[in-house]
Image (cartoon, rainbow, N blue to C red; front, side, top):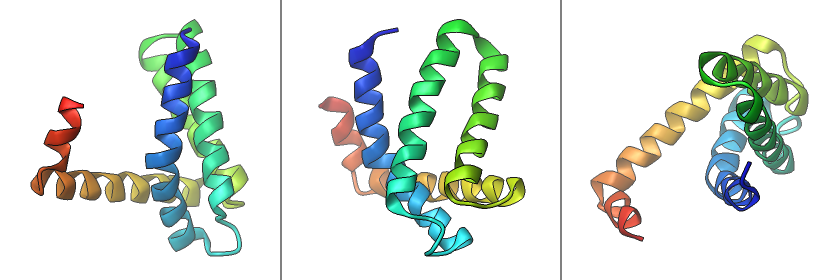
Length: 115
């Protein structure tokens, strides 16, 4: 496990995924339950646990374990049920895809590949 790569994944995740997860959580779980710091903790813990699981288990089993871990983290930190955690995850992915497409359409995605 490369610690520098893990640190980069954590920083990028906090910058990109945490705000999107926070917006989705706020929309579905409410202002009182979905705090930005909770979204940051979800991303940090999810990234670290994902790196550990990937180091010991590979392939489809690791992906399934991580799917459950991410849902459990959302459930715990946003204080909601499993179905709501799944809905928050789906909405976060949709928001991420929309933002990525918009950035690609205006050319920012192309610029980031050359950096």
